[in-house]
Length: 202
Image 1 (cartoon, rainbow, N blue to C red):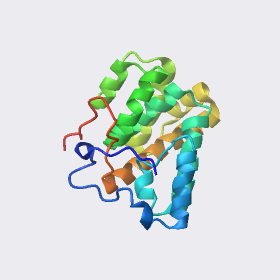
Image 2: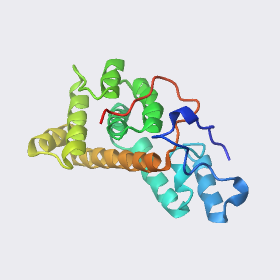
Image 3: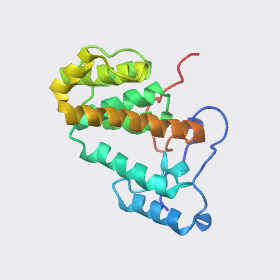
């Protein structure tokens, strides 16, 4: 079962990983099927949030399908998807999602300066209009659990109602899987590169 060996130095929080990849011999048929579906799909392996989710294979299947749509089929441009994914993972200090999606964001056209600002919790400057609108919605939603009429109106005009629905759901999805990995202390992939993120001061 392909899975990039985790790096213990990138574990969420302190302490050992709580829900690592189980030994193949311990998996039941439902777990094997869920794992194989991941391997055969666009992810090509079992890693990240799907390590703890193997404990609930039906949930894993549903979460995987939602994530596949949001990541690979959404009406939103890849640049916008990756930007708000980085914003969400930074908000909840999740190393795995940050280190996976920062290079994807760069590849999709998000500037290094924007990602450097997000990494330290600062507001990026001189953003393209669509990135600023998406980030405004994401930051307001994460901070207040809703958005103002002004933010909603601008986002609807930019992305359409379907785009706003998918943008909001994308933010929620990545917060959800980041929370799961924070609880499970799921480490970043050993192949992850870049400086990563540090927890915000308390």
